[in-house]
Each structure stands twice: as C-alpha cells, then as structure tokens.
Amino acid sequence: MYRKIVLENGVRVVTERMPAIRSVAIGIWVNVGSRDEGAGEEGLSHFVEHMFFKGTRSRSASQISREIDALGGEMNAFTTRETTTVYVKVLDQQVKPALALLSDLFHHSRFAAKDVEKEKQVVLEEIRMVQDDPEDLVQELHAEQTLTRHPLGRPILGDAATIQGLRREQLLQYLQTHYHPSQTVVAVAGNFELKKLLPLLESTFGSFQRTGRPRLNRWPPEVNGGLMVRQKPLEQAHLCLGLRGVPINHKERFAAQVLNAVLGGSVSSRLFQEIREKRGLAYSIFSYLSCFTDGGTLTIYAATRPREAPRVVELTCREIRRLRTAGVDRTELERAKNQMKGGLMLGLESSHSRMSKLAKDELHQGRHASLEEMIAEIDRVSADQVLRLSRELIDLDHLSVTALGPVSRRSLQSVLN
Image 1 (spheres, helix red, strand yellow):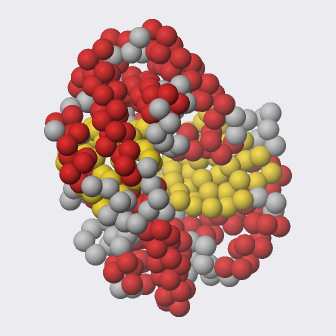
Image 2 (image 1 turned 45 degrees about the horizontal axis):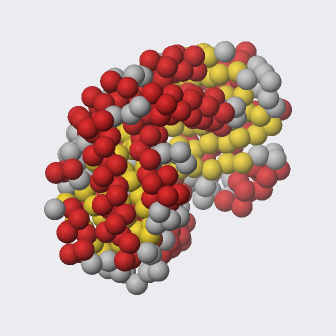
C-alpha cells in the first residue's frame, strides 16, 4: 500500500508496504546533482555524497562501517546529474537502528578538514579509473560533445583541478544552499508497520532545517551533432552515436522506450542482431535513453576492431534511417512491449527497486504511478506513435559520433557524409 506524507518542514515521505518480503529499503533522495553545480563547483555533489560516510558527531567512519555490518545490511550512496541519494537496506526487524544510522549520516556528518583532504585522493583515483576504462570514458566524452557547454554534459565526478582545490567551506556552503527540506524525499519500501515507522521518520527528519531558499538554476539542454575522435592505444575502437531523446515526463516517453528497445535495448534488437549476431562485428552493442527533467538523449554504444569502426557506424546509421522511414512492425512492437512489462514487473520485486521508484515518481512527477497504470501506458503504445516519434527525434544531420581508440577520423567522416 502506497502512502505519502509531507512533514511540516517540507520533507516528503513516501512509503510502500510489501508484507511478503523480509527486507526494508530506506532512501534519502535530494533534488540536486552535477547539473546544479556552478563554476568552480564541478564535482561537489558527488564529493558531498562521499563525505556522508566519513564520520559524524557521534560515529567515526569505522564505527559506521561496523554498525551497518552488525545490522546485516547494506548502505551506499550515488550521485546522478539531477539527484543525490543515500540509502540503506536491512532486515525488517532492523528498521529503527538503520534509520537512526542513516539520518545521523545525513544530518550530522562532520566534513572534517582532514577527511576532506584524504577523500580528495580517493575521488581523484575514481577519476583516473574512468580514464582507464574506455567504455566509461567514451560515454563521458560523448556527453560532453553532445551537450556542449551545458551542465548536463559535465562529468559527475568533476575535474581533477577542481577537486584538488576543494575547500571544506565550499562543501558546507553547497550543503546549505542545495540540501533543503523542500528538495528532499525520504522513500521507504518493504515489510514495516506504518504506525511505528511514521513517528521514527518524524523524529529523524521533522526538525531538518535550512536557512534561505534552495537554488536551482536549470535550463533545457541543446543536443549537438558532429564527429569527435580521441586517439588512444587500445585493442578496440569504442563508439558512441547520439540523437535527441525525450524529457522524463514527456507524453510519448513509453513510445520512446519502445523505440529504444527495438533499436538496441535488448538481445532481440535490430542493432544486436545485425551487428553482433549476423556479422560478428561487436561483442558489446546497445542503446539507452537518458531522460532529464527538461530534455534527453538517445545513445548507441559499440566496441569493435578499429578497422571495422566505419562499418559499424554505417550499419548503425542504416538501422536508424530504417526506423525513421518505416517504423516498427507488429511483431517487434509486441515483443518490445512484453520485454518492457516483464522488466518492469521483475525489477520491482525487491524493496530497493520499489524504494527507488517511489522516490523518482515523487521527484519527477509529484505523484505515485502504480504498476497497473504503467503497464496500461505500455499497452497503449502504437506503431504509429513510434513512427511519429522516430521522425521527430531521428535527424542524422544532427547525429553526434564519438570515437575512442586507434581510429581514423577520415574513415568515419567518409561514412557519415
């Protein structure tokens, strides 16, 4: 059963009871991410997430680790371009101590200067790790190329120079400005008793306050085309091709998901079958949607032998054109819709995934979308819808292509002309 409560300070609490399981997932979601960082703040959202685990007024970092292990649970955090999340998942009888621990991290982390200096080195290693992973790196380069000069195109981790120069006072000011009760959602899913849970949530989040108003300066991104090649001595060429997508609440968002599923979102997709199964040109090839509050992208990733990179780009463009001109047939449409419904239902069997959905629904729509409602939306997608959306989004004159590895720019440009 779904329930929403707004505390007096503006914190939104959304819950869903799942009595058939023995776990509970609790997440604190804040409507701030890398796109909200100003000049000189690149990477602060992600750095704040790290610092939540480095000690509070009453717990050291090692005590935090020992305590979550003693509860037999897991605790972690992540940062996206639009949100920051700290969460815990435990057995149902451990809800009270787990919530006490999680709220302590969120409200009372010390952000000690010595811990900030130490954590700089950890984040710098994380940045270097991305540089050494070509699949991650090419997608990061592609985001920068496709969303040029827009905050959504910046790396979530920030850049090394900003992290090296980071000061404790910057972090505290960033917290004060962005981590506001009105921008915070606490989501709980699993096996719990609501009458016992609500007083705990009120006691741990009801007194959360910030002076001033939250500062969000967001504007829609413009998706840019073009070709970028980054030379690097690798065994494979790593490719990203990008087109305009849809915002997260777009009226045709389910049609966009069908379009993505048909193009490259599954093992039965056109790209997987044509490029991997039929021709053996790639082991890894897939497409995905990135949907934000005010825009989005459709991205195709592939890794192949350097000499085959132009051929993979050519075949990918051919499949994109075919979607734009002919759309999808009835069999593809039904297969994609069944895949989406199955993935949705199977994905929501865990307390963690339910907790995530609760929070995202509240942050992006301000309401809860039931599983039945979403399945009905998927069922309503028609082939005509997908064709219209394909013609709206697919414009090869504005295709962005990013290549990483020992690839000739001229060879790629020849197949794009």
